[in-house]
Image 1 (cartoon, one colour):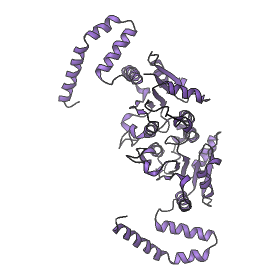
Image 2 (tube, chains in turn green, purple; image 1 turned 90 degrees about the horizontal axis):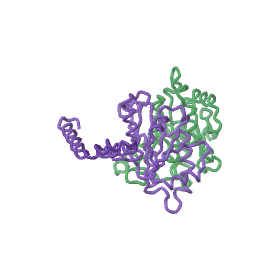
Image 3 (cartoon, rainbow over the protein chains, first blue to last red; image 1 turned 135 degrees about the horizontal axis):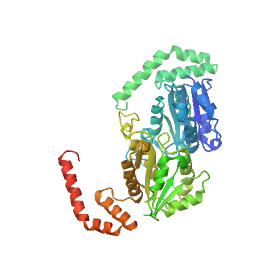
Image 4 (tube, one colour; image 1 turned 30 degrees about the horizontal axis):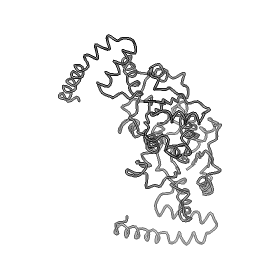
Length: 218
Length: 218
């Protein structure tokens, strides 16, 4: 599915998170990294929206929403002349969000410092998707990237690529993704071995899941 | 209470709502109308915030939040250097919102076109007030001003002035406000008559309220 990732950050080159995401970007001609610039070419942006089926807004959280430059992009590009023209140009496409915050995920709940959840906080985006008749995807939230361990960073690469390519968020989906990555890297033997053992691995994953649930962790 | 109304609109002179609100603005030296400009004088804005005890953001809804220019103001003026400096400069002040929309209030609920309530939609502002340790006031929401009757417009003048001056939202509060307005206009006789009958009117208001509640309308 052709996917446009609209990236906005006040100082993108200085952002460790955005640099990491850029380096982790999938090598997939269907998925485009597209930065918001100050001087917006409105017609060009609209053409990109029309050409893509999945639109992802990627930004750091500023006052619990998008930074001003991305809001400017939204106000200018998504104005009534465009979005309500004839057949709604964005209807039935997908709308996703990749948002980074400097806040611990524990704080986003009743009783936490932020009091409300990420889902509550992002309601204006959900309402926007609703108005555009787009399908609102669960957001990918990256909290406190600056404290990520190497292991967490590796997991983020997988999460990010799976999110942009909307790989099914389950063991089988991720296994297929991993096998494809191995093939792309020329690791055919390893890929084939994994593929041959896929059913076995799926069974194993199911057993682990069941054991965890029996343990009350599921 | 010294009140700063920060007004942002992409084309303020062409806005019927903003022009009406400007004409309805209370003649009260404690309350200041202050428009956001493109070229923000950050230090001056911060000084204004420090000098005032109640901060009101006034804007038309764009994509379920503030227009880009107001978001720019928030991102630039309310940055970490300012808001977390020493004693938090905005703590214990009040934070209000005057928002106009082109949408019928009936649509802001589950089952309505917009699916969510105004309270849900404005969560990022509530979270901002919370972060700033400010007291979040109920917002004043103006839906579909373009369809207002003259009577609704008159009511809006009272609502708006009472909101900015935070007159108690009950009959006695509004009566006091009305008596003050009459005095300001030199209508002393009428004001004194109303003042003399205040208790009587309050009793009457209470009786009407009780009767309504008995009727199941309360």
